[in-house]
Length: 354
Image 1 (cartoon, rainbow, N blue to C red):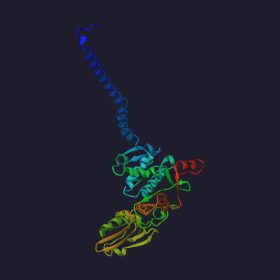
Image 2 (cartoon, rainbow, N blue to C red; image 1 turned 135 degrees about the vertical axis):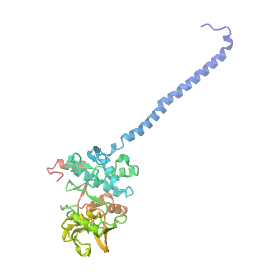
Image 3 (cartoon, rainbow, N blue to C red; image 1 turned 90 degrees about the vertical axis):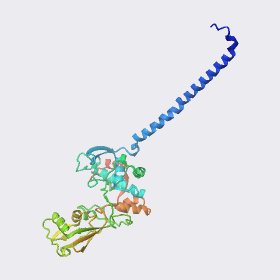
Image 4 (spheres, helix red, strand yellow; image 1 turned 30 degrees about the vertical axis):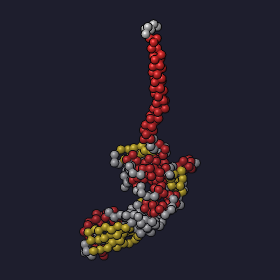
């Protein structure tokens, strides 16, 4: 290439400038290389980790799926079993409870669910035949969508993972792991509340329930309202507002203290029927009278059979672990892994649901 005549006089400065430009370009390219190779993947990975955590939120809690009828949405949902148990735990027990009580509740909820699940020999939800269970607390179990839990989600999940894959069995069969809020000091024998005598649902002492807001409650009922409610139960009831006290007599109480039978206006009614008609917390009550008002003093909350939730928390607060709580409220039971139980069933001829 031909250069201008004046170029040789300035060539040394030009070369110096050219070398400086090349060095700057090299440094810029090197910096860009470092960003692309090292920094950018870290930024992308960080963003992916957040997204991945959302997608895989329940991936580590098991592989069994169940069909749940969501009564709030009116739809059938296929759910991971452990995800469902987290929702039941949030719906059934306060997060402030001791972790060992939460574990006991998680174990009871999982067992109750699989006992009803068709894949495990259960009959499913009789209210929603296409489902194994539903989210109606009065029919199956209370439930809160895990994705909507904004308080102590990690504690609920810890309780579920702490009992992951475990169930309660009696003679290698899943038990009816029923539970209630507060026994009032002693749980009930199954046959004194329902029909069948179940060997593991025996009346046991339930101490440490003092924290329950419904350990003892009072309800005032006007005499005329009481009469109307009893006649709805049985049209043959003959009651007068005068001297109502002499027209009511408690005939029998259960081992746990709940009224099983009482005479009302010449008719024998069950304590649970009277409880339901008056909206009382339990059928363990006494009655006092003051003019045209009857006061019902009630002990406990719920049917009283199986695990007492406040009793479980009280036991945990006093040092009991979840397996000890379970074996106290469900007499003679064992805790097994689901896969171990399935192996027993596979090698035996009995029907697991019977």
